[in-house]
Length: 411
Image (cartoon, rainbow, N blue to C red):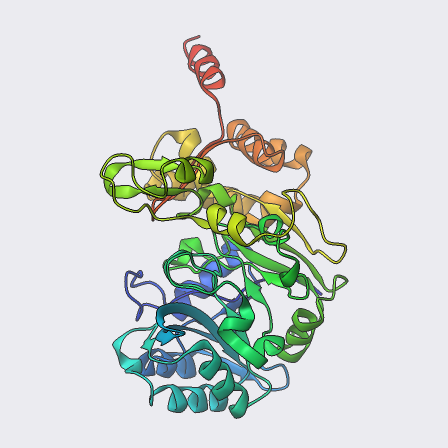
């Protein structure tokens, strides 16, 4: 069975999230997006866990849960802040379990290291090594996935708070890591430059804080909808069953380039080196982005493709295409109406962006939106890369095309 999975989201109990991050809204948007399997996020929070028990129907033989036709998998993100080797580290890890019983055991263990009620993504004083030791002591069925591994401030390889290798962070448990999450600011091709990552499956997830953002990055499988089967596919990097990931264009991520947001300074890694890592405006250190950090640790040139690499498709969310076509913000009612009309016409956003033929796109969607989807598929875009917490900006239509369209509307 082919299906789309997004393992990493947050609930309404996490900071800076929508109040609509509850199970009914998530299930509704999963259908619109074309996501079959969705992480619950935040199972460490007691109030969210109560809601999960209230709304989700356990499928014990599958290790998954159902709500109105959408499968859910129990997931949570842990923010570890700790000292090791004489310096401070801040790393986020995803923990995924197949049952409420195991979720409760993980929560009991974590409660000795921090206050789980403080946030949906709790801050815990536990190292990556200790976290791995503790979760695998509870059960070998648990999945441990280092989250958005390149983000500067909170990740395994982060330029400001991470490590230079997985072994430094996870020690002897490195081999038990289920997969690695690439994050919005990197794509698989960037990660292929590190030979030590070849043995791991690379997953992509939305890390969504609002229902409309789920599935913006995701994973496409062709296997049984079953927790243990998915875990095995990831651990063995089975290319027959893990088909590809759906990616942001990494330039659109918030930490692709280097820079200093307060000074409106955006730099390539080469420019950063030319300025000795300092902001040319204020003289303070810039935030080194994902591209810089990959360059630091890479042992292969750009463009290298490992023989066992799992492919990917880079996409732009449909509402961003519609927003640009209409010249209004993504949150506007006009964009939502056009989005829903498009999805109802062709089944789901995933169908529109990946599956539907070009002929059907142009026959069922407004021409300009169909053109936008086609340009995304062909990667004919102009992108201003994100930096220091600012999302990148994607332009699908160039100025000449826009002028031509404006002229046509005059007649």
